[in-house]
Image (cartoon, rainbow, N blue to C red; front, top):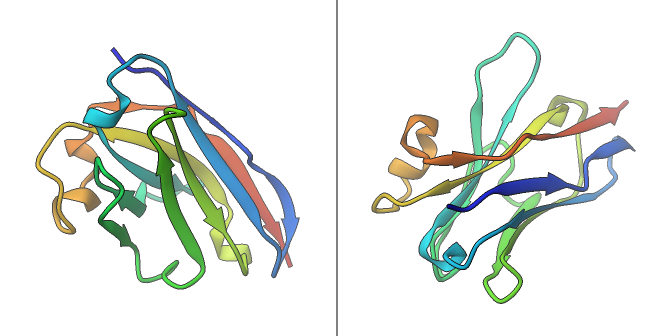
Amino acid sequence: QVQLVESGGGLVQAGGSLRLSCAASGRTFSSYAMGWFRQAPGKEREFVSGIDRSGGSTYYADSVKDRFTISRDNAKNTVYLQMNSLKPEDTAAYYCAAATFVYDSIRARNPARYDLWGQGTQVTVSS
């Protein structure tokens, strides 16, 4: 079974950038579609971005479109989230998740469909 470990979070000023990584153990990484979610205190977990098994299809929440980029390297068992032009409202714990279901822009946004989750990494954007 795949285990997920996020890294790359931290404190950054508004307008800055961070790159999150999610490293997966196991030899079946390429069989999983991957998603990034975030959760701020007192709020529900929300979809940020998703990528299919090959990396050919990507999906974004409207709030991060044109600022964030998801990518994956199946040879390195890693999925990335490049976050640019960060805003204070991007402050949250960010989680990566792995999915075995049929992946499309609708299903990708439902956290209940994902099979595996990382422990999260905190992103704090100061104004």
